[in-house]
Length: 278
Length: 187
Image 1 (cartoon, one colour):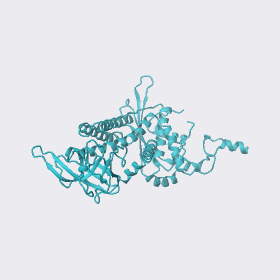
Image 2 (cartoon, rainbow over the protein chains, first blue to last red):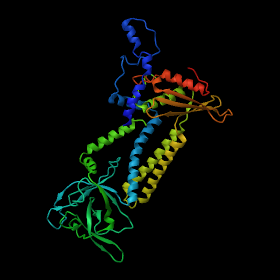
Image 3 (cartoon, rainbow over the protein chains, first blue to last red):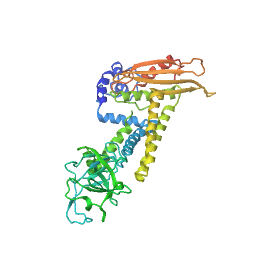
Image 4 (cartoon, one colour):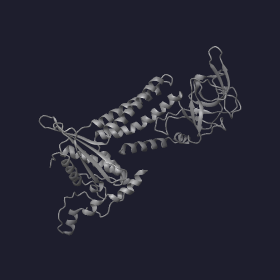
């Protein structure tokens, strides 16, 4: 961004040498016109035209690539370190956030609608379900490791497809009726985001038995649970939804639907960081 | 060098890097200095060590469940940020704006005759480049190094195509070396 301003300013100052000495290929011209010119101590590589080359993007990139080839081992190691540090910083910030919120995946994205005749259900009715997919994208922000969910509209009008949800899982608080929880049913890798509607606490141990239901669904989630399972427990819960940002998750949805876009972006960014100095 | 160094003359970063690179080459090959790589070696070491902690923490968290990997992840995250803070402090307070540190050794006894430290200063959107040559002789009794400030526009060394003119740059460097108290080796 600032480089544009720099270029405008700097181009006025660089070029003093040009006005004092010629920069064309003297020996070639000498031979062509057979006029004796005094020999300047000038190398032959200077351009044979009278005006400077326009600063095109391609020329700038070519210059940077050529400069990159002339780096010594330490400088190349430094460039690689810059690239690796970006990835490492993103990962560590994600892990720090995950530890701070005490949740395996502190930020999630609602993904896609799906109607399903689930064979494990006791009923044969097609059930609107809110399902989730885990996507491990260990790449730089904003493409960090976001868990993604198949959103059905089962939590509308609260959450829509493409919303970013922020989770945490405080150890001191217990789960209450009305909390929106993200939970994983054992045996399935797909998290679900629904609201807790019923709660039973075992008196002696304090273990919580939860029943969940999507806001926009007609029935509770007992049809989604495993065969014979009536309740879920606190250890199935990944986190409670604390806040959300609408539409931001569309980026991750695009990355999921077009994986080539992900690789192109990451490759381009990586190449840029490796070549560009300072 | 047969290949001319051409940079984007609109980019101050490229100009500075070209001048610094040629400065190092000139001083090590022409003037008999041996470059001291301490600053960049320490920065590389700290950087790669912090990335190693990051890699270990991420891998462990990926393989094991969240609850099991909590302590190791916390240790690795803490180590990563701690090492990065150390790296930042080193760059800001120890290295500052040093560009080159070179040692001229006595060819017989291998003891250092002179330690040359060059630091660079550049203001935003300004074509003036300030190089401070600080020459320190361990043998002499003087406590502080003798300094010389070379203040020059990039336009003295680069032409309109952005090609670096080495004779001009080397002339200015030799001049600065002389004025900072070094005996300049003429090729």
